[in-house]
Image (cartoon, rainbow, N blue to C red):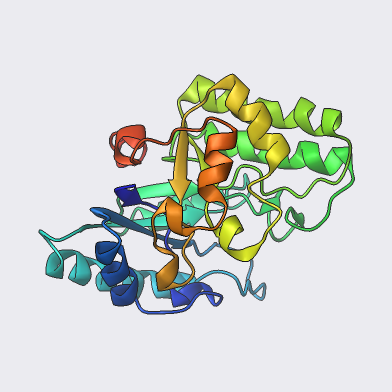
Length: 263
């Protein structure tokens, strides 16, 4: 694994460590590319505060900090500036307009809410409603169709507790869309560090049979989490179980800048 594009900072209010610590650990672990993709701010209504993402006012400092480190570490590791973006029809257009004002290398889609954080629900909480599952799938696919995302982070984040046949009926649409648009699906390494419900067996059992592209994402909220797959308990066995080959992440993504530049 030569590249990781899923790295957070303290600005999201639930991560630890400095950018330099993440970079130094990435070098120690043998990475040649480290993409920072903190939880993007949103153009939410005045008075609505999200405590799991940076504020719009933090974009300039986030950008300048990474630009400085990018220059400092040139020749040792390639530092990329990105965001993990929450897509929504209501807020996405104004967010993109804001982000385009600053240097930016890539975006990954991380769908934590459907239809959005203000009007919808958190998909990581237990969900037994087929209607809610459909809402997650529809919101995710709509985001994928913008063409702006390098890949889809934790596609199986939705914590649907209903029957497998209902789950697979709707979730396979995400895999089909990833094949249609050539957008890789992330195997999220955070879940193996934190004992989460994802990566989800029933999703990757289904997805691996359809053979989309896969990419590994550290989803690092702590510097030590920028690490090779063999250092994440259970990950290697999981990949072998479903015959998932992520290459080295550079080969899989080719040019992570492309979706953003072409948009």
